[in-house]
Image 1 (cartoon, helix red, strand yellow):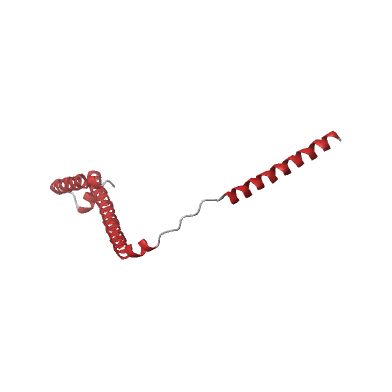
Image 2: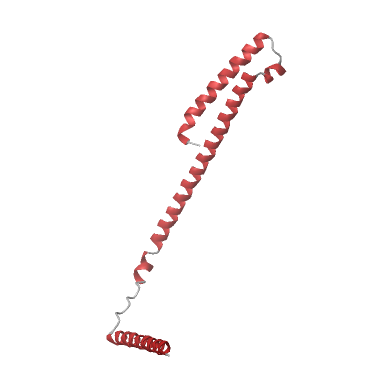
Length: 135
C-alpha cells in the first residue's frame, strides 16, 4: 500500500464512521430493530468501507514497520563496517599483493614452439585426408 496515502485513508475512515453514526441514528429514528439495522444494505456498505480502510491502514503500518527494521539493519551494518575499517587499517597496509612478473623471452619462445607443433599436426592431417581422397 502507498505510504503517502495514509492521510487520505484515515480521512475516508473518519467520513465512513460519521456516515455510519448518522445512518444508525436515522434507522433508529424510523423504528428499526437491531437485527433489521444489521441487515440494511446501506448500513452494511458503510461498515464494509470502514473494514476496507482498517485493512489498508494495517497494511501501511506493516510496511512502515518493515521500512524501519530495514533502516535499522542498514545502520547497524554501516556501523559494523566502520568499526572493522578502524581496526584493520594497520593490517591492510602491510598486506600488499605481489605483482606478477612479465613473461620473459623464454616463455614467449616456448609458446611459439607449441604453435608450430600444432601447425605441423594440422598439415599432416590435411595430407592424410588428401591421400585418402585420391585413393
